[in-house]
Image (cartoon, rainbow, N blue to C red):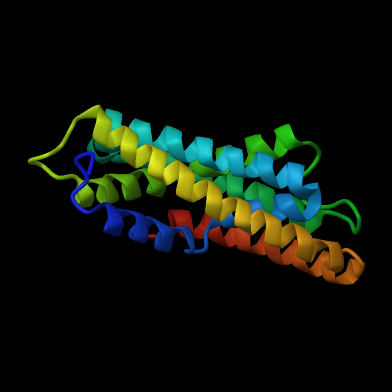
Length: 203
């Protein structure tokens, strides 16, 4: 189908990968818990755009460049780690009632989540390793194959991410009733972001 060797396996594998914990999922939860459905949806769009940019940069050969020039890859890793650590630090040091740094307006949620996605070089390497497994070398249809894969990833990503946002939004309504719980969860989210940053550069 469209030059994809096993479309069913491709979709199933990507759905499983969506459930793996990471900074993107944490950004969605943080945005929806503080920005409501509008902030959560903006965060979803930011994540999807970031994924699509990485996907097409990988197709264009950026992954090969990162492999050929390790210092560039390392610099990108440290930039992404520093960004996540900075967001985490702002969450940890926020005063009660201020809310996390992923806040303010839908446009802010969109940019934060997009940058979290783009500043993760390991995501580029994931696409490099993931795509070839499902491309049929005999029936490959060039750009049609890549477009079909990109559209599939976008649709599945939207369904999953918006589901996370909806669940978080309705749960957040109850959590907000207890400021102490909100503060604890905010600091936990900050620690997780710092942890993701450390993991990104850990050898």
